[in-house]
Image: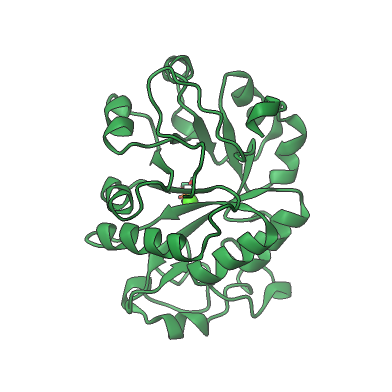
Length: 267
Ligand code: G3P
Ligand code: CA
């Protein structure tokens, strides 16, 4: 069973979440390597990160690949929509040169290849489910099935997250023990109901919409709040001091020095 000790949130219940670090490398060490590539994940490890966040979505032929956008244009030398392109064509694209010629030849990884690398490196992973309209259920179910098949049962933490509640619900039906995080730009008035309905463990919120009052309420209710995307160490420190459990950062090595230590029992 994966996610041992990572129970769904319940009001006021302080979850230890063993293995969840203070800083999660956002799309890998994406300030210094092309986002969502194996190079970015390896660099995150070299820089001391113990967990990465990545984005996954389906190709036309139903393969989960690791890419943020719904189209190939920004981060590869290809064009068009991921959901309208076969995996073999995507595998042949260059996902490194747009970032820096030094990374020429870096590929768009399949989710399976990324998980295999991360497990080998001993790194935890937050798999963010990205889905074009209509693909939410399939994406959630396929990702959960794949993780169940390839992620070591006693391995580092694996956490699914999504803005798409349908994707989380589908993942839950497929693999109820895989921990889930609800991803929202802002918590919204129904955060409590949504966390309970989807049996989520964590709540992932955008840094730009985090008001003091909501954060105080979330911390009072012991919701593990993870904030994206925080690249300024002073801002990260302020968030930690206000009770934020972890931040996503493109520069994990810049944030780690300001992160307060976790209680021994949590690490
Ligand atoms: O998972 C946190 C964050 O990555 C969500 O936003 O657009 O960077 O995928 P985005
Ligand atoms: Ca993401």
